[in-house]
Length: 272
Image (cartoon, rainbow, N blue to C red; front, side, top):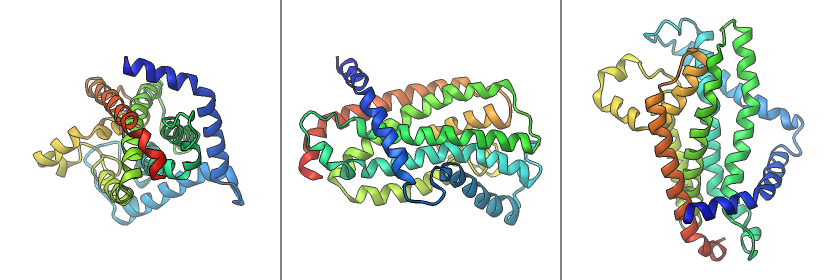
């Protein structure tokens, strides 16, 4: 069976994936003064920029009691930004990963599917390293964390499968169609604003527009980001029905992405 054989291939390549992820993380900030500290500083600086723009300058008035001040908004924003950075960075890098590692692809016995896996996993580790910063801010600002934070773990699993599935598609398509990389960058910007990160899902203008509300409900990242927001910021159980459906969709998307990648991988050596 296809999926069983491919899972076995990934399992046999686990040490290779681990080594590639380690090398990738070390190479990212090699030569910079602050080095690995940028793993923590990048999401922090991004949070400060968005907080300044959307929390102070624009001064949003959201119809939910949990968002009363700019500091509350900062925590809400950071909770959604961290998983978004993991997702968007993985997709953008997946578009380049096959070209960057062209020499490896041309080796006969190299399992090329480990490259998108490496990209998503490396960004996942960056995401995990950013979580202590998020938790620290919750503590400093006096926003209580509850045991519901542990429900973020299944949300991470859902996001991993969805991100990896899309990563397989993007990696395979970009090898043959270079314009995909530019399209992805612009599409991710639209996707960001179409996901409840800088605003809550129950933002009043959204509730008034049936079209926008339907689009958000059909967006898998809506339910993934909401899962983090409920687990961390709101301190309550995520919407399990929505998250379960999202997991099924994400896993099917992963299978389709992997299948498509496997079908065209023999052509990669000629294109890179």
